[in-house]
Amino acid sequence: MAKEITGYVKLQVKGGAANPSPPIGPALGSKGLNIMEFCKQFNARTQDKPGQVLPVLITVYSDKSFEFVIKTPPAANLLLDVSKKQKGSAEPNRNKIGSVSWDDVKKIAEIKMPDLNCFKLESAMSMVAGTARSMGLTVTGNKPF
Image (tube, rainbow, N blue to C red; front, side, top):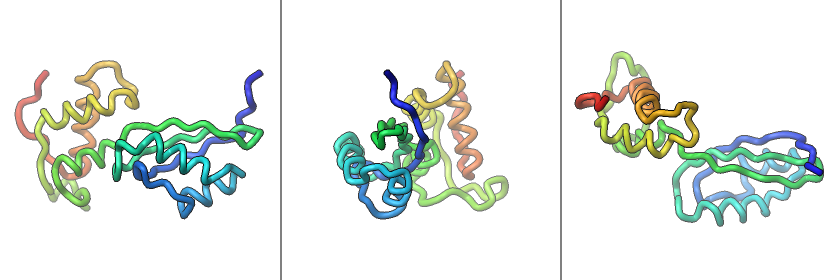
């Protein structure tokens, strides 16, 4: 028989760096979960992605057990890494802070495909390009499709 789900917890944690301090400790402690067990499992599964911000969706069951799914890094973080910027523009419609090429957008779209709600790579590239524009980055080159 399936366990009863009592809730979900969404967090963004750096890969391989989960520890019981805030925001992880209070979020999981309020649900009655074993915080150290989550940290050990998360760090073991993300040791190959150190320093990357990874969204994680934790499913909490009625017997205080849990399962979690690690998503791909946010498109905004990947775009900032590619453009070598610290943060996006405060006024993206007026102040452009840098640029990314369509090849970079394609690489990011391929990484993000499992978490996006689209079926074609072209659609994923359009979504990533829109994120880039909303951060104040210009997309350079010719659109490949």
